[in-house]
Amino acid sequence: DLAVTELERFVDCSSAWLLERVVAPKQIDAEVDALLRGKVAHQALFSFYSGLPRELGADRVSAENLDAALAYLVRCLDDALRTGVRLDVSDVEAAELRESLRHDLESFVRSEASSDLRFLPRRFEVGFGSERSSPELQRGLALGDGLFLSGKIDRIDVDPFSARGIVADYKSGKSVHSAAQIESEQRLQIPLYMLVLRDLVGIEPLGGIYHALGARQGARGMLRAADRDDLPGFSRADYLEEDVFWEQVEAARGRALAAAKRIRGGEVAHDPRGGRCPTWCDLWTMCRVRQA
Image (tube, rainbow, N blue to C red; front, side, top):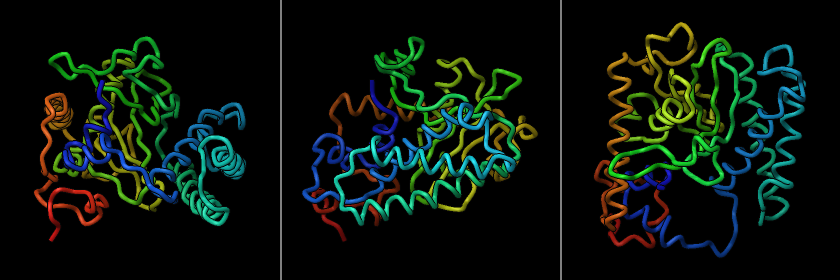
C-alpha cells in the first residue's frame, strides 16, 4: 500500500519525493521543525479529544466547559512533550515549542467551542491499509489496477442522529486549502479520506476540512452544498454542488492512481507542480536542477 501523504508529495514534485522519502537524508543537528511540531500537536489533540468524555463528561467543547477543557488540553500537551514524542532539542527550544503550541492549540479549542457545528468528534487517528488497522480497514482504499492506499485520518466528526460525518485534518502550519485550491493544487488527502469514510468506515461523507493550528483563519475544505444547513460556519466558496463535489473526489482518486503507477514504475522527473520550484523548498542543495 502507498500512503496518501507520500502520493501527495509525489504530485508536488517527484524529485522532491525521491529525496525526502527514498534518499531520506538525516540532519546532523536536531532542530524544532514543522514535522516535530506536527507530531507533538497531533499527539496532544489525540489525547485531548479521545479523553474528553471521560475527563469532562461531555462529547465536545462548549462555552460552558471551556475553562476546564483548556486546563485538560495543557495536561495533554505536557504529556505529549514528555512521553509521546522524542525530543532531541535543547531545554530552551523545548520551552519555546511548548509555549508556541500551547498558544496555537488553545486558540484552536476556543474556536471549536464557539462553533455552531453540531457534529461530534468520535474517531481519532483512524488508520487504514495496515495490519494495525481495524479489520474492515486493513486492506486500504482501492485505487484501481490492484493498487491500494494507506493512511491515517486525524479525526472523524459524526452526526449524533445519523450515519453521516465529516473528516478533519490538522495542519501545524498557517495555511489550509479551499475547495478551489484542493482541485487546482491537486491535493489528495481530504478527497481520498472521504472515500475511506464512505467505502471502508461506512459513514456518508458530507465533507472534509483542514484545520490550521498555527493561524486564526477558519477551517477550509470541501463540503456538500445540499447539506449546508447541517454544516454552518464555513466559507461560502467551499460548498460544492453534488456533481462538482463527487467529480473532484473521483479526480483525486485518478491522480493518486497515476502517481502510484509512476512510483511503481520508477518514473521520477523534475516536475514541480505549476512548473516552477517553490521558494520554500529546502531540498535545493541536493536537487539535480540548478536553481535560478
